[in-house]
Length: 485
Ligand code: ADP
Image (cartoon, protein in one colour):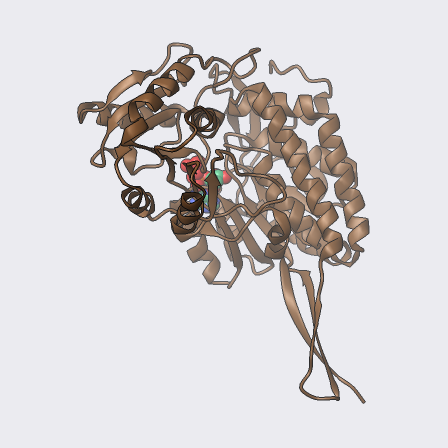
């Protein structure tokens, strides 16, 4: 293992159940690779149903006492977890970059924002309010209180190995729930490092568990066990649908953060330099592997050529390389499959008349690098216009009228994030209202923060993460009708 860490105990190759570091019952393990080099970083336990059941049962056992703590007591522990994450920010970022590939600077940013979610929800725990309802009779008081849902199962993806866990677990734990997490097999070490720090922060045994291994088996146990009252999932729409269906059998609550197909619209009256700057942030962060990445870039006819030229110039300057290397802005894609998919989309577009102003091919820096690419002349018959790209490809589509842009933008089953650029205040409001998306960037290409509700509509998901809404996902409303003498 080539990782150099100040605190070597953060790198764990065992799973974390009931406060213990454990192997799979079968002793089976599976390798984890560095996407920049293809080198093996280490092994993770290849667990299945039995270990998952034990993790759920330990979460069930820990629930009563965690839930019974005051909000402040829970907040103190969460706050310590936040502090420890910041204290070990550099090591956590190194672990993340090694297994995920993103530039170190982005990984550091992700650790900071993950800690930010934990801090936010530690504070929010103290603001879980109930209400009194005016009664229709004098001999009754009507009240509501909000209580922890119970055991939560969280299934997370590889693109934000720490933040996706923080977004789910911080509100769940703050609300008084206990949690079992299944991280993506590509990025288990970030999750396990968070578990090391959770334990040091004083989260009691069983309150936070991490199981690694067979997605199907672990998922089946999570979705069928009666003690799990909520499943929170971030990942593909196709897997999300399967999990929702399985949760129906035990009537679990679900939060789903699924795929997107974000439009990024630049109107004639936009500040083009601002639009380019935000497009770079939205499109190329994490090598284009985020669910809110600009996917369909629609430019109004009057500024199409000027915008394409400015964008091409900026994209040519992006420094590609291994995330660990100083100054690198764009790392490798997560695996071979991702490279094949992205290259397939580019080949399809080029064969149908698109032109690559920049890039358009894999890069010979390793097996998993793809050149940041700008495609012009993109039309609706190209796959790149309909599929979630999940790679560093910016396809530019030309439109003439505002109505046309809105209609095209909404012509998808997805509804996560949409962006547009305009300096006309009437248009800013009109278009914000008209776009069928859960989140809108109006003259902005970045959306996510611990204080705001992140989430989609249509087939992009159910529920919101972050802000005052994030904690509600982990609370049940209890209505009390209190008779008076
Ligand atoms: P991606 O294609 O980006 O990896 P997925 O939706 O396949 O997205 O993966 C997101 C998370 O869901 C990962 O942790 C993955 O292991 C998990 N997963 C995939 N298939 C299943 C399944 N059938 N049951 C439970 N979890 C699953």
